[in-house]
Amino acid sequence: MSSPSKVLLAAPRGYCAGVDRAVQTVEHALDLYGEPVYVRKEIVHNKHVVHELEKRGAIFVEEETEVPEGQMVVFSAHGVAPSVHANAEKRQLRTIDATCPLVTKVHVEARKFAKEGYTIVLIGHEGHEEVEGTTGEAPERTVLVQTEEDVDTLEVDDPDRIAYITQTTLSVDETSSIIAALKKKFPNAVGPKTDDICYATTNRQLAVKALANECELVLVIGSTNSSNSNRLVEVAREHGADSYLIDHHGQVQEEWLEGVETVGITSGASAPEELVEALVTFFRERGADDVSTLTTVHEDVRFMLPGEIRKELLATQGTPAAN
Ligand code: SF4
Image (cartoon, rainbow, N blue to C red; front, side, top):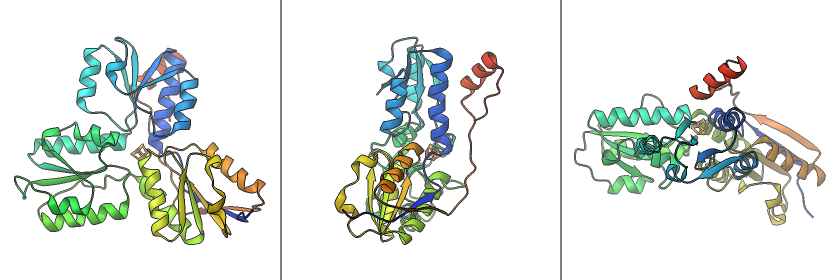
């Protein structure tokens, strides 16, 4: 049985401020209002987190139309289209919006560009909830682009009136190439003032690049539907390491460890730290005696809880609910 002697942990890794806020929102909602609290879609893309919240009484549904009239529903960190808010209002649902503020920023850009008459080129992955939510801000004006090839074949009514925005959890390098291709084809294309790819995605990709340079194998903890986690695997591979996405330590396969001296570990923005700890324990029990952290960036970002929760906490506990 081959096993690495050294474990290197990426920093930063794991929970971002938007995920932390979204998970705390559901926890507080359960404490403050009691069951049932419905949640539209997975609150964050992590199976473990969803199961833990289910155990506490959260009910996950795919659509707001599944929530019984008058009940409480939390919208996930990935954001929702305006039509979802409208449906919820029709059903007299009590809503709490846990959309990450950095996703909201992209929605605001979409609305602004649509109002100014631009065709919006949204760079992102088809079917991802964030993309569905952002597209919903101006569906008739938005086209989705996933690759440079999509840019090649893109045709628009007015090539001088193009604005691009992006999903928040894409590969930084790949997105720069797509934007460069877009600007080459449409020289007057405009974009947001600051990048839409969020700080957490950017920082975790920087950290995994550094990790890949030091390790033969990089394991990424995250769920298969987590966009930023999948990007971490790709980035690690592009930088020379073998890399796999796993939900938990039970999915590590013996053949991955053959000849590996140093294993790198990181986790997606929606993966809880306890899963990383369990993976470190797994390697310690197999003889790894050198566990250290490779820090590339120090993060200190926090978001306030949604207004509804802050108000309720203040009323019931007199706590100004910092998060
Ligand atoms: S990954 Fe970025 S955009 Fe998504 S919830 Fe976290 S901070 Fe917000």
